[in-house]
Image 1 (cartoon, rainbow, N blue to C red):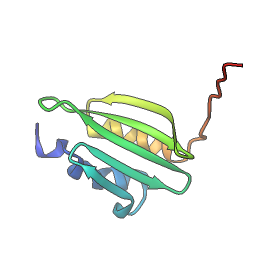
Image 2 (image 1 turned 90 degrees about the horizontal axis):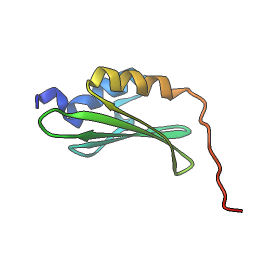
Image 3 (image 1 turned 90 degrees about the vertical axis):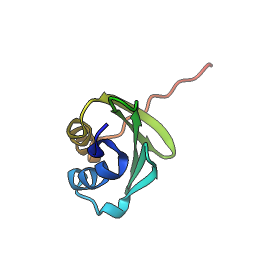
Length: 97
């Protein structure tokens, strides 16, 4: 693992890709970031130690509505996050009745 593969190193790259202040990207742990946007939250998690990969979850109204990944590079992760910044959020409703 390189120093560019931890959450702290990805935080400024993610903030720049999203066009938000770095303060909106919160380190929850060495393996997890939370990005607070006006109408949604993005959760970024690192998986694996030797060859890190990243997942991305889109949350709206307190619920996870989409998951993406595993991304092999921080650049791919940031590209997908930027695409989700202004994307329409869709919900799937399911019921047993």
